Length: 53
Image (cartoon, rainbow, N blue to C red; front, side):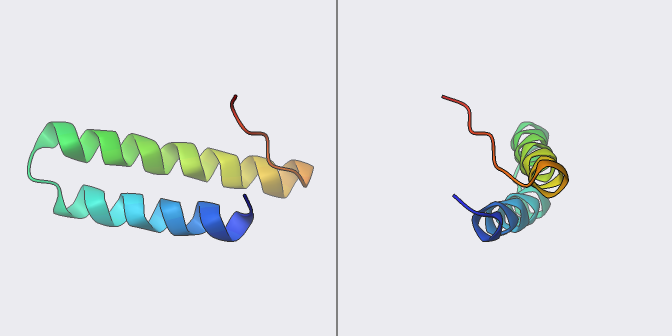
């Protein structure tokens, strides 16, 4: 996994949040986007990606 993948998933999550049919779905996609943003920030700071196992 690389930064391009994380950026792509972040953008898709934001798009899905915008198009969500209900508040619950919107919240889940926003949280996913936040998680991807956190991973991107961490990778930029530390130079590596830490993946959950």
